[in-house]
Figure 1 (cartoon, rainbow, N blue to C red):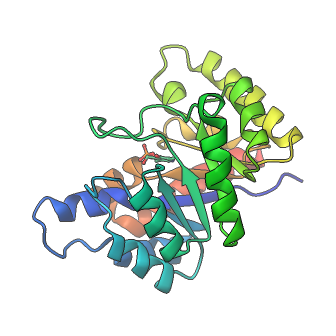
Figure 2 (figure 1 turned 90 degrees about the horizontal axis):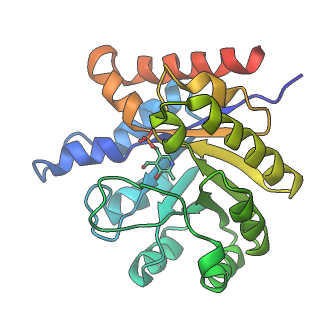
Length: 242
Ligand code: PXP
């Protein structure tokens, strides 16, 4: 029997819409609570250095009100690390961050900043906050991730989602997921996943969680947020049963 797969719902795009008018609507916290009711297993948000969507108070409210888990994505800017330690999410996911990018465009280069990441992992682990590293599906990055003391990795599925030849990218994800599992790391994946491309990734048995935002929020415009979450879960669960 295969292990079930979890959906981490990313609510950044709800906050992006709110920030377009700098008002209070739509509220990403309300959206997150609705997603939980519809079957999301955790809520993900990215506290960016430029605070372009999620604000500190959103993350604080999410931590206070969620019934599931808060997975806070973040870079290593000192003020963001300080805020994250204050918020105390269940998990942080360390991501590379560039101000000019539209979204997180690649995985962390863990090999190039091993000491810096190891120190950050230590600070979070001391406070009982688990750390996941968002990396490309690259065996060298998996090996480096293991050396940082992080307990989990999330594989960037952007290359798979955008590939002319997704089969090749999928093979990389399969190999990296196996290696990470063998190294004792928990394995998640995400970025660019939608109902048309999610099934092959959800079928990889080593992957325990998919973190998805943009496609679900986009779909919600037409069918509602709860229905969009349920629809995605249906695809993920069906892939897992096969
Ligand atoms: N996982 C991580 C680490 C991310 O940075 C993002 C994008 O914010 C996602 C998952 C979700 O990607 P998408 O919004 O394309 O589903």
